[in-house]
Length: 337
Image (tube, rainbow, N blue to C red):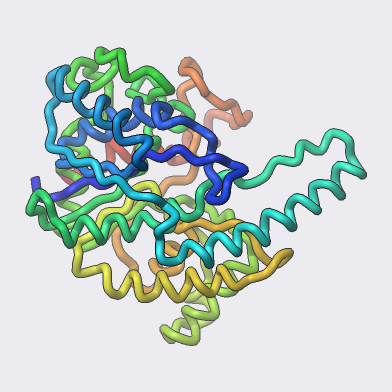
């Protein structure tokens, strides 16, 4: 196999300097076991505090008969070169949201006061982790893929097909190769590799756009002024997903040149014409230039009523049938194996 899989397992405090979901490292282990079974040699980024936990997990996975090549890279997120710009923007947006929440709570006692919890620095650093591993190339592979360690959780992926939740990693019978219904198999890894071979880069694309309209306009102006796109061509209507990014190293120079200009431009925006933002909006804009291969879907939540974490949106059977669900993309990837 000629693709290295790169992922990360971090704890992040939502109210901390960098932000995060407040989930301990173990929360991601169940889902990580699924992506480990793609059969791709793997590098896992984590902190010094998380290293022992991740190492124990990897040794456990090898002990149950699904051996793989793996390495752990210990880093601190705060050494990212754009940390200050991202952190400053985050603080401005956070402070503005706090004041807005107080205002809304004064008008409505039921206002929950909850807003963004992601760690933007980790989101933006994905591409730099990928590039670093492509330069080190510990497994001598041609291609590299980023996959979020928690992406196969059961809110998006049916339990009956391998979706998981916290602490399920001790039940090996739920996973490939013991569970024949589990869709996370080495065929996914082969499909990823072949897609990168053919297209140089591939991603998933959601049929909607969730970002602050001002951020969208900032990126649109860059696409028009720097890349000669027309007003219509530069319009962002769909959102690329940062959870899966397959890439060949020849793509990095152009991608990161665009990415860094866009990142700094978005960090310079001020509330209220601003909001938290992750790598996905910049990838969505870059796609307008590169037009690389994407696998499209329209709905995140899965559609299996008998499974845990099913969300009933009240769709009619006909409406439900029209929605392409996120989890089906894993089986789609196998068709390229």
